[in-house]
Length: 139
View (cartoon, rainbow, N blue to C red):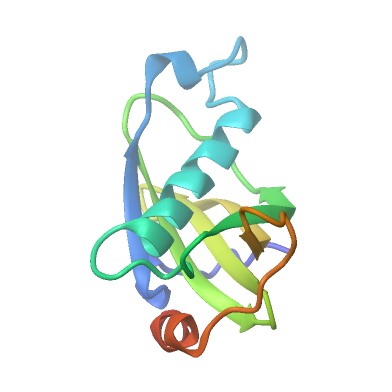
């Protein structure tokens, strides 16, 4: 269930995404499929941008679960802000909470589970201590 009282300041990372006219559907609001793109942009910025890579060499993250609650319409033009934080670190998985805001108001709330996968074997690979040390402050 969505946390309607969430504030962007509650999250250790924040990403801003520009709304595009093409994001709108026939009802005049941002199409529900676009929300997944907003979440992906924020996850990518959190996990891949800047500094030393979080992933172990030869690995990638795959999304294995996405739970997305639509709370309010989002309208063009403008931007959305996406707050992201780590809820739980498993052996090879990362559970992340993400909330999308427009003009400070919650418009969508999501929980996603990512698994670190070895790109050669295509099997889950345990998250290293180095990666855990980078991820823990993001909770």
